[in-house]
Length: 519
Image (cartoon, rainbow, N blue to C red):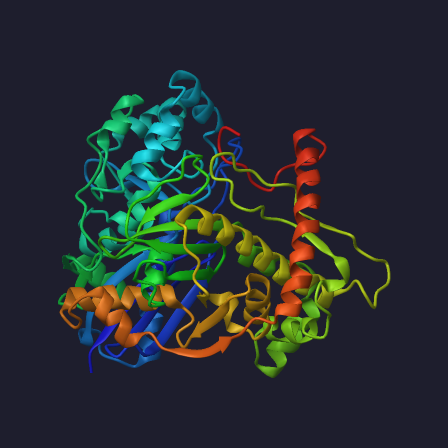
Protein backbone atom coordinates (compact mmCIF):
# COMPACT_ATOMS: atom_id res chain seq x y z
CA UNK A 1 0.00 0.00 0.00
CA UNK A 2 1.17 3.52 -0.75
CA UNK A 3 0.57 6.65 1.32
CA UNK A 4 0.60 10.44 1.24
CA UNK A 5 1.54 12.78 4.08
CA UNK A 6 0.41 16.32 4.82
CA UNK A 7 1.91 18.75 7.31
CA UNK A 8 -0.81 21.22 8.34
CA UNK A 9 0.64 24.23 10.19
CA UNK A 10 -2.45 26.03 11.46
CA UNK A 11 -2.87 29.04 13.70
CA UNK A 12 -3.54 27.03 16.84
CA UNK A 13 -1.81 23.74 16.15
CA UNK A 14 0.35 21.73 13.78
CA UNK A 15 -0.42 18.21 12.64
CA UNK A 16 0.95 15.48 10.44
CA UNK A 17 -1.70 13.44 8.67
CA UNK A 18 -1.20 10.27 6.65
CA UNK A 19 -3.71 9.21 3.98
CA UNK A 20 -3.83 6.21 1.72
CA UNK A 21 -4.19 6.84 -1.99
CA UNK A 22 -7.97 6.41 -1.74
CA UNK A 23 -8.19 9.46 0.52
CA UNK A 24 -8.73 7.50 3.73
CA UNK A 25 -7.12 9.03 6.81
CA UNK A 26 -4.73 6.48 8.31
CA UNK A 27 -3.22 8.38 11.22
CA UNK A 28 -2.78 11.84 12.66
CA UNK A 29 -0.49 13.45 15.19
CA UNK A 30 -1.24 16.95 16.44
CA UNK A 31 0.36 19.42 18.81
CA UNK A 32 -1.00 22.78 19.92
CA UNK A 33 1.25 25.79 19.64
CA UNK A 34 1.07 29.48 20.39
CA UNK A 35 2.66 32.49 18.74
CA UNK A 36 4.26 34.83 21.23
CA UNK A 37 4.44 38.56 21.11
CA UNK A 38 7.75 40.40 21.04
CA UNK A 39 8.74 42.46 24.06
CA UNK A 40 7.82 46.12 23.66
CA UNK A 41 6.33 45.53 20.19
CA UNK A 42 2.53 46.05 20.39
CA UNK A 43 0.52 43.87 18.03
CA UNK A 44 3.41 41.53 17.31
CA UNK A 45 2.87 37.81 16.77
CA UNK A 46 6.14 36.02 16.14
CA UNK A 47 6.44 32.59 14.58
CA UNK A 48 8.94 30.45 16.49
CA UNK A 49 10.46 28.43 13.66
CA UNK A 50 12.83 26.53 15.97
CA UNK A 51 10.13 25.27 18.31
CA UNK A 52 7.78 24.89 15.34
CA UNK A 53 10.15 22.62 13.48
CA UNK A 54 10.71 20.54 16.62
CA UNK A 55 6.95 19.99 16.93
CA UNK A 56 6.66 19.15 13.23
CA UNK A 57 9.40 16.53 13.56
CA UNK A 58 7.57 15.02 16.53
CA UNK A 59 4.25 14.96 14.66
CA UNK A 60 5.80 13.29 11.59
CA UNK A 61 7.44 10.55 13.65
CA UNK A 62 4.35 9.92 15.73
CA UNK A 63 2.03 9.79 12.71
CA UNK A 64 4.26 7.17 11.09
CA UNK A 65 4.38 5.10 14.28
CA UNK A 66 0.59 5.31 14.69
CA UNK A 67 0.07 4.25 11.08
CA UNK A 68 2.40 1.26 11.55
CA UNK A 69 3.79 1.70 8.06
CA UNK A 70 7.21 1.71 6.47
CA UNK A 71 8.23 5.32 5.72
CA UNK A 72 9.40 4.11 2.30
CA UNK A 73 5.74 3.60 1.41
CA UNK A 74 5.01 7.33 1.75
CA UNK A 75 5.11 8.45 -1.88
CA UNK A 76 4.96 12.18 -1.26
CA UNK A 77 4.70 14.81 1.44
CA UNK A 78 3.33 18.34 1.18
CA UNK A 79 2.45 21.21 3.51
CA UNK A 80 -0.33 23.66 4.08
CA UNK A 81 -0.40 26.47 6.60
CA UNK A 82 -2.06 29.53 8.02
CA UNK A 83 -1.78 32.21 5.38
CA UNK A 84 -0.16 35.65 5.72
CA UNK A 85 2.61 34.30 7.96
CA UNK A 86 6.04 34.95 6.43
CA UNK A 87 9.58 33.66 6.91
CA UNK A 88 12.79 35.47 5.89
CA UNK A 89 16.06 33.70 5.08
CA UNK A 90 19.69 34.79 4.81
CA UNK A 91 21.91 34.08 1.80
CA UNK A 92 22.60 30.57 3.13
CA UNK A 93 18.90 29.73 3.29
CA UNK A 94 18.77 29.91 7.10
CA UNK A 95 15.74 31.42 8.80
CA UNK A 96 16.36 34.80 10.39
CA UNK A 97 12.87 36.21 11.11
CA UNK A 98 9.26 35.04 10.96
CA UNK A 99 5.80 36.24 11.95
CA UNK A 100 2.45 34.46 12.18
CA UNK A 101 -0.73 35.35 10.34
CA UNK A 102 -2.36 38.26 12.19
CA UNK A 103 0.80 40.03 13.31
CA UNK A 104 -0.20 43.70 13.39
CA UNK A 105 2.95 45.45 14.53
CA UNK A 106 3.24 47.66 11.45
CA UNK A 107 0.58 50.26 12.31
CA UNK A 108 2.83 53.27 11.75
CA UNK A 109 4.22 51.86 8.51
CA UNK A 110 0.71 51.51 7.09
CA UNK A 111 -0.06 55.11 7.99
CA UNK A 112 3.20 56.27 6.44
CA UNK A 113 2.48 54.34 3.24
CA UNK A 114 -0.94 55.91 2.91
CA UNK A 115 0.41 59.39 3.61
CA UNK A 116 3.35 59.11 1.23
CA UNK A 117 1.35 57.35 -1.51
CA UNK A 118 -2.30 58.46 -1.04
CA UNK A 119 -3.77 56.00 -3.57
CA UNK A 120 -1.29 53.16 -3.24
CA UNK A 121 -3.52 50.76 -1.30
CA UNK A 122 -6.27 51.02 -3.91
CA UNK A 123 -3.70 50.67 -6.71
CA UNK A 124 -2.14 47.55 -5.20
CA UNK A 125 -5.55 46.06 -4.29
CA UNK A 126 -6.62 46.15 -7.94
CA UNK A 127 -3.62 43.98 -8.79
CA UNK A 128 -3.45 41.69 -5.77
CA UNK A 129 -6.94 41.59 -4.26
CA UNK A 130 -5.35 42.42 -0.89
CA UNK A 131 -5.29 45.51 1.32
CA UNK A 132 -2.55 46.31 3.81
CA UNK A 133 -4.58 44.74 6.64
CA UNK A 134 -2.81 41.37 6.60
CA UNK A 135 -0.19 41.89 3.90
CA UNK A 136 3.59 41.75 4.06
CA UNK A 137 4.65 45.16 2.74
CA UNK A 138 4.10 47.08 5.97
CA UNK A 139 5.73 44.33 8.05
CA UNK A 140 8.82 44.42 5.88
CA UNK A 141 8.97 48.20 6.19
CA UNK A 142 8.73 47.81 9.97
CA UNK A 143 11.62 45.36 9.86
CA UNK A 144 13.71 47.70 7.73
CA UNK A 145 13.14 50.53 10.20
CA UNK A 146 13.31 48.65 13.50
CA UNK A 147 15.55 45.63 12.82
CA UNK A 148 17.82 46.87 10.01
CA UNK A 149 20.50 44.26 10.71
CA UNK A 150 17.96 41.47 10.04
CA UNK A 151 16.49 43.26 7.03
CA UNK A 152 19.90 43.70 5.40
CA UNK A 153 20.65 40.00 5.83
CA UNK A 154 17.37 38.95 4.23
CA UNK A 155 17.85 37.21 0.90
CA UNK A 156 14.57 35.33 0.38
CA UNK A 157 11.00 35.41 1.63
CA UNK A 158 8.47 32.61 1.76
CA UNK A 159 5.22 31.64 3.43
CA UNK A 160 5.08 29.23 6.39
CA UNK A 161 3.88 26.26 4.31
CA UNK A 162 6.78 26.95 1.92
CA UNK A 163 9.12 26.99 4.92
CA UNK A 164 7.98 23.52 5.97
CA UNK A 165 8.74 22.23 2.49
CA UNK A 166 12.09 24.00 2.48
CA UNK A 167 12.98 22.19 5.72
CA UNK A 168 12.14 18.91 4.01
CA UNK A 169 13.57 19.50 0.52
CA UNK A 170 16.13 22.28 0.89
CA UNK A 171 14.32 24.28 -1.83
CA UNK A 172 12.80 27.72 -1.24
CA UNK A 173 9.81 28.34 -3.50
CA UNK A 174 6.25 29.68 -3.22
CA UNK A 175 2.84 29.11 -4.78
CA UNK A 176 -0.08 31.45 -5.55
CA UNK A 177 -2.71 30.62 -2.92
CA UNK A 178 -0.49 31.53 0.03
CA UNK A 179 1.94 33.99 -1.56
CA UNK A 180 -1.07 35.89 -2.85
CA UNK A 181 -1.93 36.89 0.73
CA UNK A 182 1.23 39.02 0.96
CA UNK A 183 -0.33 41.63 -1.31
CA UNK A 184 2.87 41.62 -3.40
CA UNK A 185 1.33 39.31 -5.97
CA UNK A 186 -0.70 39.42 -9.19
CA UNK A 187 -4.08 37.70 -9.23
CA UNK A 188 -4.06 37.56 -13.02
CA UNK A 189 -0.49 36.36 -13.57
CA UNK A 190 -0.30 34.18 -10.45
CA UNK A 191 3.21 35.45 -9.79
CA UNK A 192 5.07 37.94 -7.59
CA UNK A 193 4.90 41.67 -8.33
CA UNK A 194 8.39 42.82 -7.22
CA UNK A 195 7.72 46.35 -8.50
CA UNK A 196 5.30 46.82 -5.61
CA UNK A 197 8.14 46.28 -3.15
CA UNK A 198 10.47 48.50 -5.17
CA UNK A 199 7.94 51.33 -5.29
CA UNK A 200 7.77 51.57 -1.48
CA UNK A 201 11.53 51.31 -0.97
CA UNK A 202 11.90 47.60 -0.26
CA UNK A 203 14.12 44.93 -1.78
CA UNK A 204 12.65 43.59 -4.99
CA UNK A 205 15.01 40.60 -5.45
CA UNK A 206 13.94 38.46 -2.47
CA UNK A 207 11.03 36.67 -4.11
CA UNK A 208 11.53 32.96 -4.85
CA UNK A 209 10.28 31.00 -7.88
CA UNK A 210 6.54 30.30 -7.99
CA UNK A 211 5.30 26.76 -8.56
CA UNK A 212 1.70 25.64 -8.73
CA UNK A 213 0.27 23.38 -6.03
CA UNK A 214 0.97 19.77 -6.91
CA UNK A 215 4.33 20.46 -8.59
CA UNK A 216 7.40 18.62 -7.27
CA UNK A 217 10.16 20.55 -5.50
CA UNK A 218 12.46 17.58 -5.00
CA UNK A 219 12.93 14.74 -2.53
CA UNK A 220 13.43 14.61 1.23
CA UNK A 221 17.01 15.60 2.04
CA UNK A 222 19.38 13.45 4.05
CA UNK A 223 19.25 15.88 6.99
CA UNK A 224 15.44 15.95 7.00
CA UNK A 225 15.31 12.17 6.67
CA UNK A 226 17.51 11.72 9.74
CA UNK A 227 15.38 14.17 11.71
CA UNK A 228 11.93 12.91 10.70
CA UNK A 229 12.45 9.25 9.65
CA UNK A 230 10.96 10.07 6.23
CA UNK A 231 12.49 8.21 3.29
CA UNK A 232 15.03 9.82 0.96
CA UNK A 233 12.80 8.62 -1.90
CA UNK A 234 9.73 10.50 -0.71
CA UNK A 235 8.79 13.38 -3.02
CA UNK A 236 8.31 16.87 -1.59
CA UNK A 237 5.37 18.48 -3.37
CA UNK A 238 4.24 22.11 -3.41
CA UNK A 239 1.28 22.70 -1.13
CA UNK A 240 -0.77 25.83 -0.47
CA UNK A 241 -2.69 28.07 1.88
CA UNK A 242 -4.98 26.36 4.36
CA UNK A 243 -8.24 27.83 3.09
CA UNK A 244 -7.59 27.02 -0.55
CA UNK A 245 -6.37 23.52 0.33
CA UNK A 246 -9.51 23.05 2.40
CA UNK A 247 -11.58 24.14 -0.59
CA UNK A 248 -9.87 21.48 -2.69
CA UNK A 249 -10.53 18.92 0.04
CA UNK A 250 -14.20 19.90 0.05
CA UNK A 251 -14.77 19.61 -3.67
CA UNK A 252 -15.08 23.41 -3.95
CA UNK A 253 -13.29 23.59 -7.28
CA UNK A 254 -15.77 25.17 -9.72
CA UNK A 255 -17.11 28.70 -10.17
CA UNK A 256 -19.84 29.63 -7.62
CA UNK A 257 -18.98 26.74 -5.29
CA UNK A 258 -19.28 27.98 -1.70
CA UNK A 259 -17.77 26.84 1.59
CA UNK A 260 -17.18 27.79 5.20
CA UNK A 261 -14.05 26.47 6.83
CA UNK A 262 -14.53 26.50 10.60
CA UNK A 263 -11.10 26.44 12.19
CA UNK A 264 -9.26 28.85 14.49
CA UNK A 265 -10.59 31.56 12.18
CA UNK A 266 -13.65 31.00 9.99
CA UNK A 267 -13.34 31.67 6.28
CA UNK A 268 -16.30 32.05 3.94
CA UNK A 269 -15.26 31.47 0.33
CA UNK A 270 -17.00 31.69 -3.04
CA UNK A 271 -15.23 30.60 -6.22
CA UNK A 272 -14.99 32.92 -9.25
CA UNK A 273 -13.76 32.13 -12.74
CA UNK A 274 -12.43 35.69 -13.08
CA UNK A 275 -10.11 37.63 -10.74
CA UNK A 276 -12.65 40.35 -9.92
CA UNK A 277 -11.98 42.94 -7.20
CA UNK A 278 -14.42 45.15 -5.29
CA UNK A 279 -14.53 48.88 -6.04
CA UNK A 280 -14.60 49.70 -2.31
CA UNK A 281 -11.96 47.10 -1.33
CA UNK A 282 -14.52 45.47 1.00
CA UNK A 283 -13.89 41.92 -0.26
CA UNK A 284 -10.65 40.00 -0.13
CA UNK A 285 -9.78 38.07 -3.31
CA UNK A 286 -7.23 35.25 -3.39
CA UNK A 287 -5.83 32.84 -5.97
CA UNK A 288 -7.22 29.32 -5.56
CA UNK A 289 -4.94 26.29 -5.77
CA UNK A 290 -6.92 25.54 -8.93
CA UNK A 291 -5.59 27.41 -11.97
CA UNK A 292 -8.14 29.78 -13.46
CA UNK A 293 -10.11 30.12 -10.22
CA UNK A 294 -10.01 33.00 -7.74
CA UNK A 295 -11.86 33.14 -4.44
CA UNK A 296 -13.84 35.95 -2.85
CA UNK A 297 -13.34 35.57 0.87
CA UNK A 298 -14.77 36.75 4.15
CA UNK A 299 -13.07 36.12 7.48
CA UNK A 300 -14.59 35.74 10.94
CA UNK A 301 -11.84 36.32 13.46
CA UNK A 302 -10.90 33.88 16.22
CA UNK A 303 -14.14 31.82 16.17
CA UNK A 304 -12.37 28.56 16.98
CA UNK A 305 -9.88 30.20 19.34
CA UNK A 306 -12.74 31.88 21.21
CA UNK A 307 -14.34 28.47 21.75
CA UNK A 308 -11.02 27.13 23.02
CA UNK A 309 -10.76 30.10 25.39
CA UNK A 310 -14.32 29.56 26.65
CA UNK A 311 -13.70 25.84 27.18
CA UNK A 312 -10.44 26.38 29.03
CA UNK A 313 -11.59 29.36 31.08
CA UNK A 314 -15.04 28.20 32.20
CA UNK A 315 -15.55 24.51 31.47
CA UNK A 316 -13.07 22.62 33.64
CA UNK A 317 -15.80 20.28 34.91
CA UNK A 318 -16.84 19.39 31.36
CA UNK A 319 -13.22 18.83 30.37
CA UNK A 320 -12.71 16.47 33.31
CA UNK A 321 -15.95 14.61 32.59
CA UNK A 322 -15.10 14.32 28.90
CA UNK A 323 -11.70 12.87 29.70
CA UNK A 324 -13.29 10.41 32.12
CA UNK A 325 -15.78 9.03 29.58
CA UNK A 326 -13.49 9.35 26.55
CA UNK A 327 -15.22 12.05 24.51
CA UNK A 328 -14.40 15.59 23.41
CA UNK A 329 -15.41 18.34 25.84
CA UNK A 330 -17.07 20.18 22.96
CA UNK A 331 -19.43 17.23 22.54
CA UNK A 332 -20.68 17.65 26.10
CA UNK A 333 -21.00 21.41 25.66
CA UNK A 334 -23.04 21.01 22.48
CA UNK A 335 -25.37 18.57 24.23
CA UNK A 336 -25.91 21.17 26.95
CA UNK A 337 -26.36 23.97 24.42
CA UNK A 338 -28.86 21.98 22.35
CA UNK A 339 -31.35 22.31 25.23
CA UNK A 340 -31.10 26.11 25.09
CA UNK A 341 -33.74 27.78 22.88
CA UNK A 342 -32.90 29.58 19.65
CA UNK A 343 -31.44 32.97 20.50
CA UNK A 344 -29.70 31.88 23.72
CA UNK A 345 -32.03 33.95 25.91
CA UNK A 346 -30.95 37.16 24.20
CA UNK A 347 -27.22 36.92 24.97
CA UNK A 348 -25.24 39.00 22.45
CA UNK A 349 -21.57 38.03 22.02
CA UNK A 350 -19.22 40.79 20.87
CA UNK A 351 -16.13 39.27 19.29
CA UNK A 352 -15.47 39.24 15.53
CA UNK A 353 -17.13 41.88 13.37
CA UNK A 354 -18.29 41.23 9.83
CA UNK A 355 -15.68 41.74 7.14
CA UNK A 356 -14.63 45.31 6.36
CA UNK A 357 -11.43 44.71 4.47
CA UNK A 358 -10.78 48.37 3.72
CA UNK A 359 -11.08 49.53 7.37
CA UNK A 360 -10.92 46.54 9.63
CA UNK A 361 -11.02 46.55 13.41
CA UNK A 362 -13.02 44.88 16.15
CA UNK A 363 -14.77 45.87 19.33
CA UNK A 364 -13.61 44.73 22.75
CA UNK A 365 -14.47 41.07 23.50
CA UNK A 366 -17.58 40.87 25.65
CA UNK A 367 -21.00 39.36 26.25
CA UNK A 368 -23.98 41.72 26.34
CA UNK A 369 -27.46 41.27 27.77
CA UNK A 370 -26.48 38.72 30.38
CA UNK A 371 -28.92 37.74 33.09
CA UNK A 372 -28.24 37.04 36.77
CA UNK A 373 -30.71 34.17 36.61
CA UNK A 374 -28.44 31.06 36.58
CA UNK A 375 -31.13 28.99 34.86
CA UNK A 376 -30.98 31.37 31.90
CA UNK A 377 -27.43 32.65 31.86
CA UNK A 378 -24.99 29.78 32.23
CA UNK A 379 -22.29 27.88 30.36
CA UNK A 380 -24.78 26.21 28.06
CA UNK A 381 -26.52 29.41 26.94
CA UNK A 382 -23.28 31.34 26.58
CA UNK A 383 -21.74 28.50 24.57
CA UNK A 384 -24.76 28.37 22.26
CA UNK A 385 -24.65 32.14 21.83
CA UNK A 386 -21.06 31.86 20.57
CA UNK A 387 -22.07 29.23 18.02
CA UNK A 388 -24.98 31.37 16.87
CA UNK A 389 -22.82 34.47 16.65
CA UNK A 390 -20.15 32.81 14.49
CA UNK A 391 -22.92 31.70 12.12
CA UNK A 392 -24.47 35.19 12.02
CA UNK A 393 -21.17 36.91 11.19
CA UNK A 394 -20.48 34.26 8.53
CA UNK A 395 -23.90 34.86 7.00
CA UNK A 396 -23.26 38.58 6.82
CA UNK A 397 -19.93 37.96 5.09
CA UNK A 398 -21.60 35.63 2.60
CA UNK A 399 -24.25 38.27 1.89
CA UNK A 400 -21.51 40.79 1.06
CA UNK A 401 -19.80 38.31 -1.23
CA UNK A 402 -23.08 37.49 -2.98
CA UNK A 403 -23.64 41.19 -3.73
CA UNK A 404 -20.09 41.42 -5.06
CA UNK A 405 -20.14 38.28 -7.24
CA UNK A 406 -23.77 38.52 -8.28
CA UNK A 407 -24.32 34.86 -7.42
CA UNK A 408 -26.05 32.98 -4.60
CA UNK A 409 -25.41 29.29 -4.05
CA UNK A 410 -28.27 27.59 -2.19
CA UNK A 411 -25.93 25.10 -0.57
CA UNK A 412 -22.57 25.35 1.11
CA UNK A 413 -19.98 22.95 2.39
CA UNK A 414 -19.01 23.22 6.06
CA UNK A 415 -15.77 21.72 7.32
CA UNK A 416 -13.01 22.05 9.88
CA UNK A 417 -13.22 21.35 13.58
CA UNK A 418 -16.46 23.33 13.96
CA UNK A 419 -18.31 20.93 11.65
CA UNK A 420 -17.65 17.87 13.81
CA UNK A 421 -20.57 18.48 16.15
CA UNK A 422 -24.28 18.16 15.49
CA UNK A 423 -25.45 21.58 16.71
CA UNK A 424 -23.21 24.11 14.97
CA UNK A 425 -23.95 22.84 11.43
CA UNK A 426 -27.66 22.99 12.17
CA UNK A 427 -27.40 26.54 13.50
CA UNK A 428 -25.38 27.54 10.42
CA UNK A 429 -28.04 26.14 8.10
CA UNK A 430 -30.82 27.97 9.92
CA UNK A 431 -28.94 31.27 10.03
CA UNK A 432 -27.82 31.26 6.37
CA UNK A 433 -31.01 29.67 4.95
CA UNK A 434 -28.80 27.31 2.98
CA UNK A 435 -28.38 23.57 2.80
CA UNK A 436 -25.20 22.71 4.70
CA UNK A 437 -23.23 19.69 3.50
CA UNK A 438 -20.87 17.97 5.93
CA UNK A 439 -17.99 16.01 4.40
CA UNK A 440 -16.87 12.61 5.61
CA UNK A 441 -13.34 13.98 6.06
CA UNK A 442 -13.79 17.02 8.33
CA UNK A 443 -10.12 18.03 8.22
CA UNK A 444 -10.53 19.11 4.63
CA UNK A 445 -7.31 21.11 4.58
CA UNK A 446 -5.32 17.94 5.08
CA UNK A 447 -7.32 16.02 2.47
CA UNK A 448 -6.69 18.85 0.01
CA UNK A 449 -3.01 18.53 0.78
CA UNK A 450 -3.19 14.79 0.15
CA UNK A 451 -4.74 15.48 -3.25
CA UNK A 452 -1.92 17.89 -4.13
CA UNK A 453 0.69 15.39 -2.92
CA UNK A 454 -1.01 12.68 -4.97
CA UNK A 455 -0.95 14.84 -8.10
CA UNK A 456 2.78 15.41 -7.58
CA UNK A 457 3.37 11.69 -7.14
CA UNK A 458 1.35 10.80 -10.24
CA UNK A 459 -1.39 9.07 -8.27
CA UNK A 460 -4.00 11.52 -9.59
CA UNK A 461 -4.19 13.14 -13.00
CA UNK A 462 -5.24 16.57 -11.76
CA UNK A 463 -6.69 18.37 -8.76
CA UNK A 464 -10.30 18.66 -9.94
CA UNK A 465 -10.82 15.03 -10.91
CA UNK A 466 -9.11 13.81 -7.74
CA UNK A 467 -11.29 16.09 -5.62
CA UNK A 468 -14.43 14.80 -7.33
CA UNK A 469 -13.32 11.22 -6.72
CA UNK A 470 -12.25 11.51 -3.09
CA UNK A 471 -14.60 14.03 -1.49
CA UNK A 472 -17.66 12.35 0.04
CA UNK A 473 -20.45 13.79 2.16
CA UNK A 474 -22.10 12.16 5.15
CA UNK A 475 -24.91 14.53 6.07
CA UNK A 476 -26.97 17.43 4.77
CA UNK A 477 -28.71 19.92 7.08
CA UNK A 478 -31.77 21.67 5.71
CA UNK A 479 -32.69 25.11 7.05
CA UNK A 480 -35.62 25.63 9.40
CA UNK A 481 -37.09 28.81 7.96
CA UNK A 482 -38.94 29.66 11.19
CA UNK A 483 -35.62 29.63 13.01
CA UNK A 484 -34.16 31.67 10.15
CA UNK A 485 -36.72 34.43 10.77
CA UNK A 486 -35.72 34.55 14.44
CA UNK A 487 -32.03 34.69 13.55
CA UNK A 488 -32.61 37.56 11.12
CA UNK A 489 -34.00 39.64 13.98
CA UNK A 490 -31.15 38.57 16.27
CA UNK A 491 -28.65 39.58 13.57
CA UNK A 492 -30.19 43.06 13.40
CA UNK A 493 -29.83 43.49 17.16
CA UNK A 494 -26.25 42.21 17.07
CA UNK A 495 -25.39 44.65 14.28
CA UNK A 496 -26.73 47.61 16.28
CA UNK A 497 -24.99 46.45 19.46
CA UNK A 498 -21.69 45.92 17.68
CA UNK A 499 -21.80 49.41 16.20
CA UNK A 500 -22.21 50.86 19.70
CA UNK A 501 -19.33 48.74 21.00
CA UNK A 502 -17.09 50.04 18.22
CA UNK A 503 -17.92 53.57 19.34
CA UNK A 504 -16.55 52.71 22.80
CA UNK A 505 -13.30 51.62 21.14
CA UNK A 506 -13.22 54.87 19.16
CA UNK A 507 -13.70 56.78 22.41
CA UNK A 508 -10.85 54.76 24.00
CA UNK A 509 -13.17 53.45 26.71
CA UNK A 510 -12.49 49.85 25.63
CA UNK A 511 -9.71 48.17 23.68
CA UNK A 512 -10.16 46.53 20.28
CA UNK A 513 -9.82 42.75 20.11
CA UNK A 514 -7.79 43.21 16.92
CA UNK A 515 -7.27 46.01 14.46
CA UNK A 516 -5.54 46.11 11.13
CA UNK A 517 -2.27 48.02 10.98
CA UNK A 518 -2.81 51.71 10.35
CA UNK A 519 -6.40 51.81 11.64
